[in-house]
Length: 277
Length: 277
Image (tube, rainbow over all chains, first blue to last red; front, side):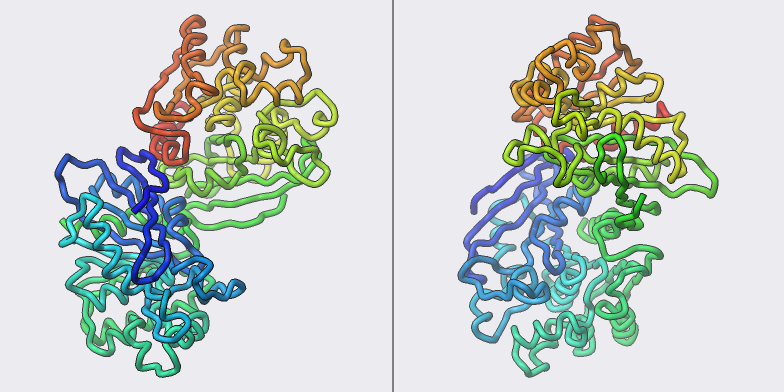
């Protein structure tokens, strides 16, 4: 692991790091904020997964998480959204597939199955690296994210409830199997058999029996993707049927941007901190 | 004036606007955050001037001012740092002159004197526009900024103490006449006669009799530009001799980035709010 940059912020350190990842077979970059803490202290780890077209950097620049994370004593890890590099197959003109659009799944179809393994990268490889290099208590992990990253957070939490003790999302894609902006990617990554898609769809996971104690979702009511791609009411319905305690807050006037995310960031950090104590 | 974008944030609206500016003879873009307020209410206006290479956007994305400005009821205006456009003379490979490097002065030398009139733009033209289009109480204006923008804030406040009731700065260039990264620009904009430069140099202004009641400066002690370009102790000395109440805080471990700015943003907003009540 190599340190790309490190800056003091809110008494802690916002760093950016690079490493050669085995799961995605390429160099991966990620950001970690370590809050002020005492020597030897181990801190809870909160994973933030970003949306389509993003890297580790967008939320680091615009998410406004450091002040509250410093106050609450949370490590915040912000991974990239896909493998990248010359040797990684991509569709450069397609923002909904390839670079910046890994959808937090493990691809089964060649040529994508070699690099597009973000599920394993986020669930297994990167946690091992974080445990090794940072003052992290890996028994206390939470996960959240935005849009495609909200999909990632929900599906990772539902798929690994033993690993994550808290889960929230901003404007998540809750039913990517059925949404126009994700369906073509799922087909290319996973193949035509839709039964293979269900492990990567929050609604399908809940229908198939996956459970998580409590989930918070904030959704902007003025979000341009609300009707076409996000449709949080589908997840609300699935949770209601399954008895999952979902808090879905429709936020009047808010769009899909980081202005929305940063506004409700404190609420999400408080939510996680309460459950990771 | 044309609205480029507007997003709800922290109960207010973060907007970006464009207009044809007379002083700089080109289209200018600026950002305005209007906090939540009652119908008919007039709010204090806080000007944030950005540093070299920046546009209106950097602090809008990374400054983390909206949460506290919403709480305190401050309008925050973030102008661009120079004129821009095909017809504006520039040195594209020089980040310390031309586009992104207007130095908040009115140029006297051709061909720069036609467009590079950021002093008049910020002090006169843009306030008129803000007064016309936003719920602004122009009797309550404060000003702050970063680096070149800290220079802008100090020199505008010292030059117009009747216009601005509060002034703070993050890592300001306090003595641009004498610093390597600003001297060549001053010569090109203003000519060889250094007596014309003094109105745009905080240290020189104070030496020449300009006064301002109280000033707050935060400076990162790990800032790579500290010794070569910033040298805040020169301003501290000038203020001490002149009896100006300067609070200069050296912040251990902090660099020149927005990680530094955002960390101390709340303190600065509180400082201004107390004086703009």
